[in-house]
Amino acid sequence: MTPFRTLKVLPTPSLTVFVALQVLDILTTMLGIHMGASESSFFIRRLMVAGPVGALLISKLFAVVLVLIALKMRRPRVVVFLNFWLIAVVGWNLLMIVITGFRN
Image (cartoon, rainbow, N blue to C red):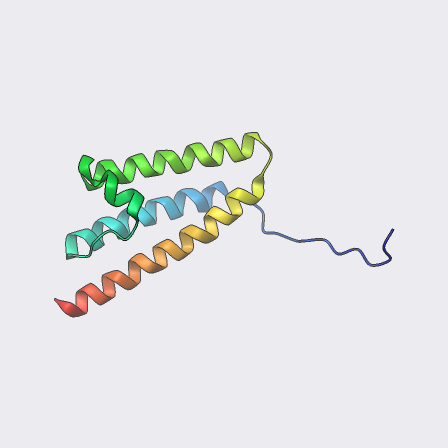
């Protein structure tokens, strides 16, 4: 037994934050596409055959299934990771919106 045991403290997984970030991702992606930006994600770009809204809804359905599986398997860290990832994605979308706005 080690005398100093450290615990990894992670934020509590929040489904409310997950849903809010999903909505923000949809809104910022649609705004970016409307302004003339292109989709960066290879996966979403391939789904664009179904149209932008269809592609985003398919990807969001995939994300929800992933979170449900993670929660069913008692892996809440996956939700925390996805929330941090989505913060980066929404930030990227906002950056692309600003850059596209300056080009036009």
